[in-house]
Image (tube, rainbow, N blue to C red; front, side, top):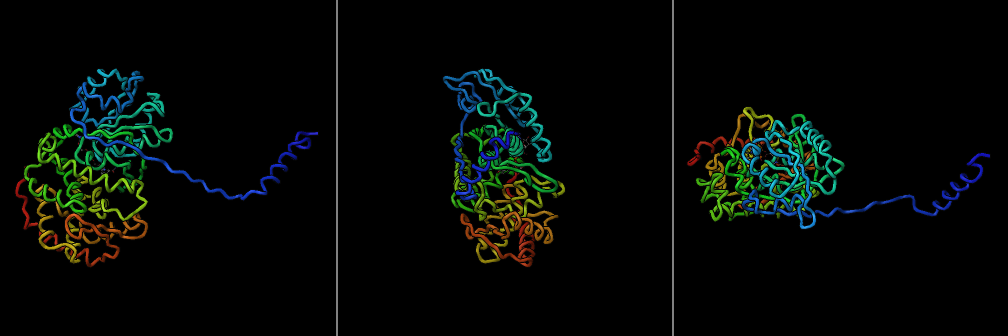
Length: 405
Ligand SMILES: NC(=O)c1ccc[n+]([C@@H]2O[C@H](COP(=O)([O-])OP(=O)(O)OC[C@H]3O[C@@H](n4cnc5c(N)ncnc54)[C@H](O)[C@@H]3O)[C@@H](O)[C@H]2O)c1
């Protein structure tokens, strides 16, 4: 007699017969809470400031801390020594990895290299953190690696560019570019904490400051008319130093931008709703950004896209001539481009097709219906795109930058 004939068959039959009385369909339901802090912290690297140490896990009861510091190589050059002094002061054992902060380095290989570093450190998947320090590129690459390593390893973001501090660093998206496509591969993975020190901006090259200003103008256009006025009144003075200064009138610019962005992101963190006002300026720009020659920064491509949207809104009667003029003037006075030789009707059409796929079959193009307000268009035509291009080319010379330092 074998085992089956002894009893296992019976047991199996028994199980099957008892299961028969159950519904053989299951529905699994769970939701994942997201809970992270975004904080502006001055003097983050001062050894007397405990914020970064706490984010690394230092507490009264836990002082043998290790963490993996993934840092933008340019940021390392400026702040590496101060960071080492800081971690030593808090007796944090660090494993350092330098990551390229350039868009060309936003690759799958870079994310995989990060995961190899996590293996070589032997990072503990629940208690030891990755501290990502850098601009949007580094935060996106390291965030992606953190999200896939052992299906999720905690990380902290320390954004060091204006774009990072008001946009890339404060949401939950991660990603890398793939083929000719921006952010084609990515995840949603919340950091544990985001620590923003405006002091980092002091060493940021001016072109990257202007790049961040593009996203601030976006925020003003879609939801914050007071921010628009503030920018308009101060655009000639906006530079890295006065954005970083305490009690500067521009301190409010950072605050309002972060506040507005989080207000938009929080109710729709996983982008289940695809009518997203924060996508303003992000309809045509993804197709332009990686193809333009010479290359454009993210914010510059967004500005060119925003200009077209200003023209589209004006031509549809949504935005007055005065407000269209104010917006184009503000962008150019900030030092942003509003057009590009590659930005022709065929590219706009192709970009819109690609965006429609990304937005699940509808255009969902945010347009301003007055400064500080947004509506969505689903019926833009090729003729409108062509007319908008003509509007921009007629207007670009009328607004020669007044003050660009
Ligand atoms: N995940 C998101 O939600 C999100 C949102 C917006 C943008 N992004 C992405 O962010 C990227 C752009 O990020 P970015 O504008 O921060 O540029 P970036 O990360 O390329 O950094 C710009 C340059 O500044 C250097 N740098 C960074 N901090 C510095 C500092 N304090 N001092 C001196 N130099 C410094 C970097 O090494 C780099 O050369 C794009 O790839 C874009 O797709 C992501």
